Length: 461
Image (cartoon, rainbow, N blue to C red; front, top):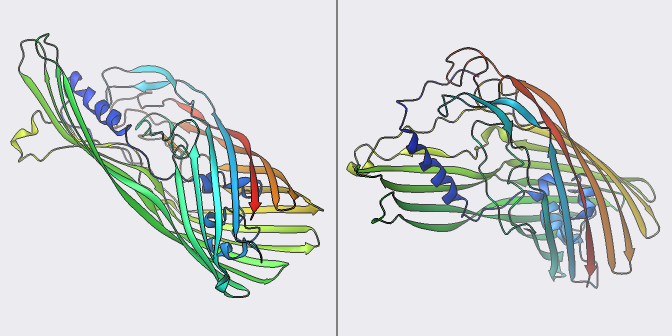
């Protein structure tokens, strides 16, 4: 990665509080949708199959797995399928210690220290419902949602230059809502369409800070929220009970936030120092995704599912805050600040293979699944910046048991993040100096694991 050009003149040290204020204000924003389905799966059946669920075995979570499968959820004489699931997935990353954490590019001094690699566990409840509107064409409506238990929503843009597992900090710490319709065009051909619900936010804040006892500090914060949606489409072919094939196309969604911050400070007998700038970030990004799978029974009670997902990550929008000074023609701009110069990273699109097996013994079904997902970055970050996304091996086991119209499913999951060594090149982020001056230097190992599982209960009414 080529060296970044040097930033403009260094600002007074007290001016560095303003990016912190912008980040703090953003933290009050409710986030848009996470991607629980892509990362961990909705319901224990899908999770136990490592996400290979686009072609068969549809339940109340079909509105996410493949909206075309909604037409098959409620059999004759039944009109409603309801699923409730609970999920717990706890990440554990390798420690990153004794590396450069500040330098004269992003701060005042060159210091060594440890990086925070403690990320929140994903703990929450998922709900899925499929309601048959009419027997004609098996027209069925579906709704899927996820609500975290730890908080209604958690937002953290992460560190711009420090080592950061960019897809694991807050991406699964948000509510998620999916709604869809499915129908049967022919007895063996089913189609569906749905939408993901998200939000974009626009914020503004006015801040006055004072060190004078006779002049109070003050702050005003305002925000407006606008709903955003992105569509997804599904098709399912079921020529026989022993074979089915399905595909889902999910269009991309960027959940962004923009903020205008007007600040002033009065210290002692000095005059007022004004700092006015704009801050923006792509809080969440879900790529264009095409999921194609097939499911077949080579023998009674034995079902194999194969799936291949394509994800277009080359258009990924990073969550790092971008700070820009207001228009130079505006006389109220105040003290000029240097705009952000966030590092860039080479990205790649992904092909994710998934394979799963189900063995049914009477009313009990045993399941196992595996998926292989490469990281979205083409190379380790040897230059400026330390965004990380290690290659992931995903293993899962599960079991389900049916009691008349009630079914209980359980699963355990282990995601192994392959260890990769990051070696930083000499000099700082602008290519100045020699030795271990870059953030993250001289280097470190990135990787870890995610352990957890869940349970889901399904009813047919």
